[in-house]
Length: 336
Image (cartoon, rainbow, N blue to C red):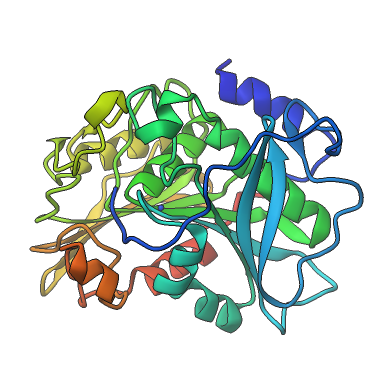
């Protein structure tokens, strides 16, 4: 049993459990360790006594995990049903991003208003998620347990809102997509994963079956579609881990088809977008969407001034990754 599984086994007791560059916006400073007067925690995870439900709209939330004060944002639609289980989407920002940036850039709040689900936007520490010993940044160097943090966010929200454990999902871009894959490898919290411009790093010896949608551009130089090291913009300097050397994206999709025991994928192409969709037992699916000529970006999002200043790739217009991602989530709840 991995260290993530051991920690999660404690974190979820009594609870309900059931995205490298995306932009440069302000993100929380490294959170301080809690003092002796803070609420008691369960193996490092604490939500304090009697947490109240988040208010309607967008709000900032906090939680203590592994001795650190961590932050995240929550979006709760005004028309969210209060008398029945509701879906939850966890959206993980990329390197240098933040929950606030992800909430602002990718359009999940509008999707939540339309379809009726809650969105959580966790903040990494030091603007990077730890997904392996080599990646990424100071969080990896310091051994931050981001898997336990996301698990605790889901647990906390499940205690405050009628979250449906069969319809709890995770999406991520780049470094956030890597963490989404790590959560798929080391937990059984989520029914489906959407990973955009991402890869999978580290060991994943015995994951449980899970529906997977991966979206990637063939011209991505940060996390190459063909696999191997990519542009890393200095994240590995000064002794800070930053190695990204993943498999070819089609091989990654095939790995999850094998895990899910899927049939051979059915492939279709429309203009520059190729979709390879594989049906799997118990209603699961593994789908790879390839956008010819697209770079490292979230398709369908708006080009931001910060992105232009940083020289980030222009978002592809051939696909709306948020609408596509939600359609995939809604079609693939956890089997009953």
